[in-house]
Image (cartoon, rainbow, N blue to C red; front, side, top):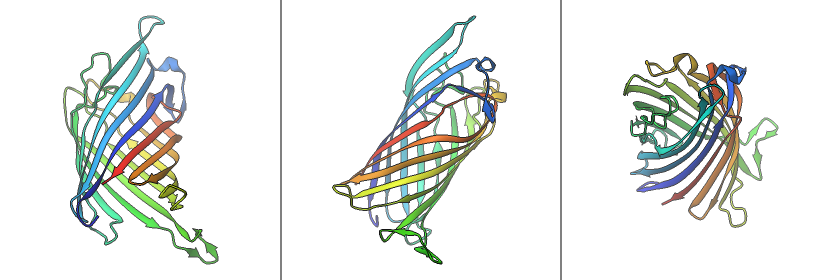
Amino acid sequence: PSGGGGTVWLEYDFMNQYINWHATGPSSGINNSDKQIKTHFLTAGGQYMFNRSFGLMVTVPYTIRTFRTQGNGDDINQYNHANFGDVRIWGMYTGLQEDMSLGLLAGFKLATGDHTYNDFDRDTSIGTGSTDLLIGAYKLGTFPSRIGKLNLTFRDRPFNWFVQAQYEYPFASTGNYTPGKEFDGALGIYYNFGQVGPLKELAPMFTVLGSNRTHDLGIEANTPNSGYDRLLLAPGGEIRLWLLRFYADVEFPAFVYANGNQLVAPYMVKTILSYDF
């Protein structure tokens, strides 16, 4: 928007990590004392553009987690805990191009999340206990209508693409645990059918997500069994009704390299309900 305007949203994510993974494939559960980490993430967020160039974004997560780990002998101990996670605050600059298709982001992840629950390890805790620097960028674009004789439009509408990247650097930590540095990137394509019945927008989407995370550090870290590289495939889509938008996808791992032994999930689910004002 040229003046004030923004979006608020509520996001729900689900992840059930129960497959022990070593290097590039599954490994026997005997090699890992942790057996399951099941997590429901609820995140409230808001974004406000003060003008065409500058904006602010804040996210506040709440996490519900079940952790199952090896106890004495053949016993499996189960712990359930829920609390607020780490708040993220971003500043946004979208004035690099007139159509606002290129933007830069910078901010901080604050150490607001709970990281002191006794029955969770530091790498399992809801909060990391660290303050992180966040740096990001995004670019939106449209495919050309034709390449030679190949028509790249459908119903006279173009296909669209986007790319985004984020780097997270923890520079202040509590206790004897520092989470790994992390780079996340996404490359996606979508097609907007436009008005379909009562819907103002119907847009199927496909995204490739990539992540690189270094080892955790510190006495309280499990350094050998931390850090990973992964590639996820995420089919999804978005619909819009009036000022409401709903997005959903399912993220499947296409490639995972895990240092040591770590629990991974066979899929992850994401849903977002947002309101523009």
